[in-house]
Length: 389
Ligand code: ADP
Ligand code: ASP
Ligand code: MG
Image 1 (cartoon, rainbow, N blue to C red):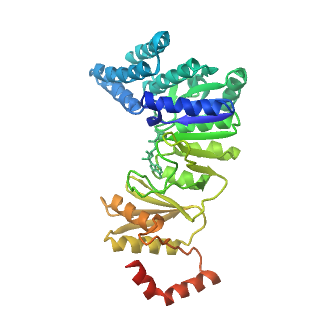
Image 2 (tube, rainbow, N blue to C red; image 1 turned 90 degrees about the vertical axis):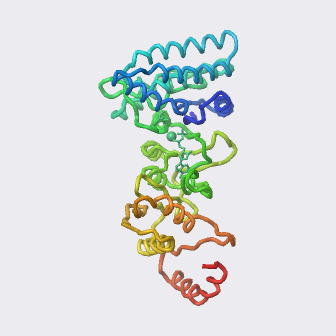
Image 3 (tube, rainbow, N blue to C red; image 1 turned 45 degrees about the vertical axis):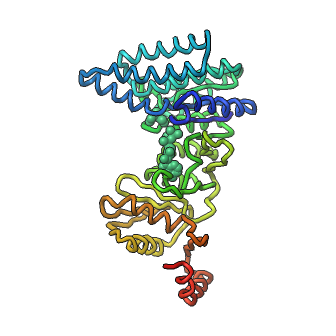
């Protein structure tokens, strides 16, 4: 079984959905597939706004119209003739429910996107079935969740593709709930672990986990391999590309997580698994006011702290606090300077400089490390001249 999860931007419009269909169909040519999808981008935020407006007794007709237009535009572009009518009828039914402001409204976006995907795959001739994650994923009861997943997979052995909404679940009392914002990644990991899948892919809008958020630093690079722990650390401290709870179910069964780009499917992206990154430092993330520099091996805390302090001092950024947590260094800087500090630290730890020389970090002070440092000290004038620092 191959589990593939697609995020909001991957299903944002008909063009993107067509890419998703291509990726899923080529996976289904090789193995049975569970396709997990998020709501189309922006939909969950709108549903939350509708819920809020309803609670406050305000009008929400504009928001519903906005969502309807978006979904019907997708249907209009993906389907023709009687197939279009069937897809419209299905979405119309879901929108009728949405207008009644049902419990768990925020998760209805996933019902819309996955119904469109499942129907499109059927129309393409794939043996496809939509499955109800609300009845399958029981938040707070992993054993029941896994038993439900095994059952639905076994009972539908004649189906090549099962399509499951991400994010949505039930609590142990049977009430509708969600797995938290960004939770579709976790839905996919649960499906994968529950059916002992051979492969788990998280398809998104970037080419894997990168050394930092490429929206903050354009020179961020994809990290080809990293351990489960390093990925968890980056995610937990702000790397939105992966929802942190996703790691555990995969780690428990030793299943690699592939982070891939829907818009560049040939790019190998990142493999999170039992292997380690090829360099000591794997990335830096930022959550609120804390920078988190993550290593994929043991490192010398004092050396790391010195390197961080010196880098930030050169940029006149005051370091308020440096602390350590398992494989990462947590750094707090003066308020408002977080992004500047992120850029400076990324440059120091991850960027190849203009002379195309690698930045060097010595993790230990054994015989080899000491000899190397002596050599560097002896040639420091030459190094300064070459680097211009
Ligand atoms: P999806 O909708 O596919 O779940 P998300 O928006 O949740 O996608 O996550 C992808 C986004 O995560 C990227 O567009 C990127 O801006 C952000 N991001 C933050 N940190 C990183 C990182 N270290 N590597 C890659 N992307 C990151
Ligand atoms: N649609 C949900 C959200 O926006 C879940 C997800 O995309 O993973 O948070
Ligand atoms: Mg996400």
